[in-house]
Amino acid sequence: MPSQPELYVLGAGPGDPELITVKGYKLLQQAKVVLYDNLANRALLDLTPPDCEQIYVGKQPYGKYTPQEEIHSLIKHFAFSKGSVVRLKGGDPFIFGRGFEEIMFAREQGIKTFFIPGITSMQASGLEDIPLTHRAISEGIWVVTGTKKDGTLSGDLRLAMQSNATVVIYMGMKQLASIAAAYTDAGHGDIPAAIIQHASTPNQKSVRGAVKDLVALADSKQLTYPAIIIIGAVTNLAI
Image (spheres, rainbow, N blue to C red):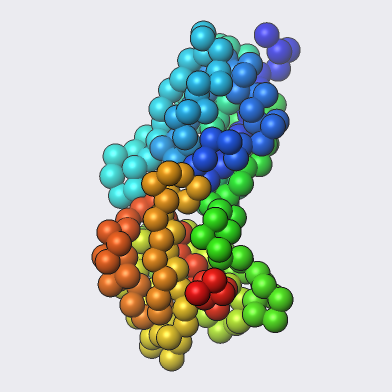
């Protein structure tokens, strides 16, 4: 057992288990305890040793969830009782994943922390022929959350829509009507957009159209969460 308890915050990637990093792959092969999220592919758990404890601490979108305080308690318990714990989070833990909250908590408890990045879901947009940047079309990216802690639409979205950069919205499926209305009210309703659900998995689905039609587009393909919304001319390049 390490002289100091350890926490490894590990990004599981967008969904395809083969998109985990080599470092993450090796870590799981020697894990003692894994606390895993709803969006982490369960196939990654098959990499762990037979005696590894696997504990689900996921959060269903707008449904049942494991309180963050309980996750913190489990991190502390297993770090001290087992010597180390792997916190497996979907995508990249530092992009809307609350990963750094868990690292700060662990450090306060005297637990040594390690971070292993993951491929975030927006990077899987290339699997739908959507580059996030493209010369002479989009020279930047805005990455915003669709829903703030209080449930309202992020104010940064109104700033993002003033630029020519690609806008990527996480956790925005419940706000599709508000997003479409915000763009339409600003005179940008005809900007191309796309929604990608279950990116990089066999269940991947997508739809393209104008941002003003986001609700109808999602309904037409029965798209729901988890999904990312991409707004900008890059969504039209392959059409």
